[in-house]
Amino acid sequence: RTKRFLMAARGVSRLAVTRLVRVVGAAAPFAAAAYVSPSIFRIPVAEAFWSRSVVTQAAGAEIAKPLQGKDVKILQYEICPFCCKIKTVLDYLNVPYTTEDVNPLSKAQLKITQALPEDHPAHKYKKVPLAIIGEEVVADSPVILDQLLAMLAADGRTADTQFLASRKDPEVKKWMEWADKELAVLLFPNLTRNFTESYQAFGYVHSVPGFSMMDKISNQVVGATAMWLAQGKIKKKYGIEDERKALMGCLDKWTDAIGDKPFLGGVEPNMADVTVFGVLRAVEGFETGTALLEGSNVKPWYERMSGKVGARHHARADRQ
Image 1: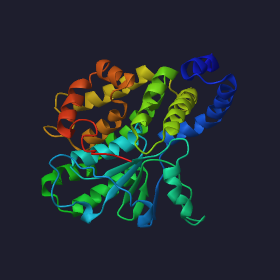
Image 2: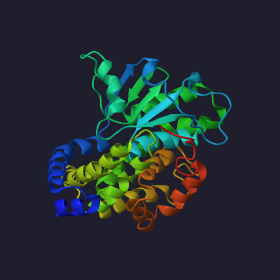
Image 3: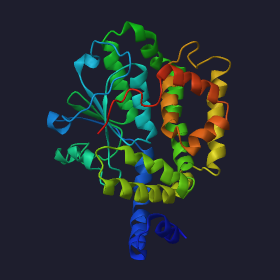
Image 4: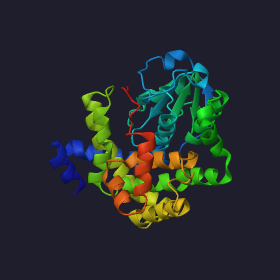
């Protein structure tokens, strides 16, 4: 059935489809692992690896350049919740940054790590998000976030003092970890419940200016199929029976914690509010995003957070 569907949808030959199914079958576990398993490394890198850049800055951003004047670049997948979390925090704080979309199949943009010595811990590292802060590469979203926030605190941003300090609160830490280890993990099997939804999710590749038409077509077809095939393995790994029911139950925990307050932080969002919102923003505009807003009590909070952070990717003027 998969072969017949792909031939009808893409107009390719039976032989091409046979080869495609073999490829995605082998790639499925690796594609899923890249979505849900960030790693921790910090390495120096030459400016030549990241010198291409575009302007990305939130409206109303502070004139003084933050992070001790260092540039920030995020290597990402557009639908990666860990990448969206980092970008959302930067958007909320009006910190300028650039992004570069990684080709999910070739991962060519991550080949900068191949230049490292073989005994280096990040040699041939191939996961996202990968942040380049100044001339340093930092991997794993919690580590990236910690470093960025520590640098922003050192900047003496008085307007954000309370928000930046909130990350040290034990309750805030608990929910930030929950966003990574429970909520983000549930998004993958929901986003890839069937081939149609998986194909829709990979439609973002058509808006990546640095991808060729062949890159866009191959990534949407192969990437979507690989993710769809990997869905069952991810559900088994995390003991998920009904992915939609599990997601709604997870969101109920969050809304119960907020209670009658506008945000978990009270009148204004704290770090947990922004990171949870960033993770959920990865599925905004997809069937899963619509379902979680309509099928849980999270919508009022989500809309309030949208007002605080701004429209999705409002900070991006362009991307590579």
